[in-house]
Image (tube, rainbow, N blue to C red; front, side):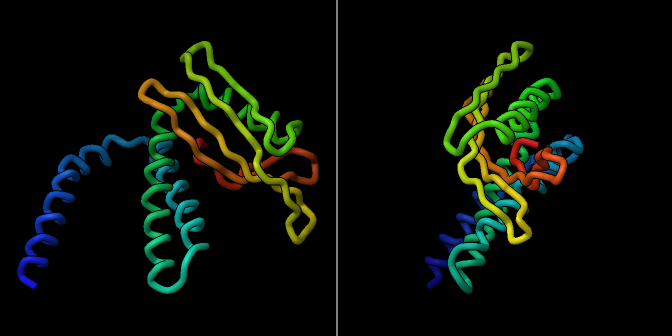
Length: 167
């Protein structure tokens, strides 16, 4: 029993050691990064809550919050205004015109970043409103980030993003 407690204490200590500069990072965050983190955490927590039951559901929700928050922070931190504008333009066009599964590409010649967008599921809400789930990927200097979202069509035909890991 003592060995198990010692191992657990050691793992917690090592894990928390990686958080040493957390306060500096938090102080350097801008509002976009904070919004991305919170939005990602909410979406991740919601998705996680759809799995398991009891304690298992709590674990899935916790994992979803952590992964979603991290993803939202990463996306917000890396998309500058011109990238965000290209991404948003692609999202609006693809939601209005593409079929489920069709991949729509975008590129920003200013930053050199590129990405893809793909609607994966179109469905009707109980009030008759059309909504679409989608996935998107963006190529950054240090790798590829993928995320998702949901958008619904308004009465005037425009699409509103309810959740988006890149916005």
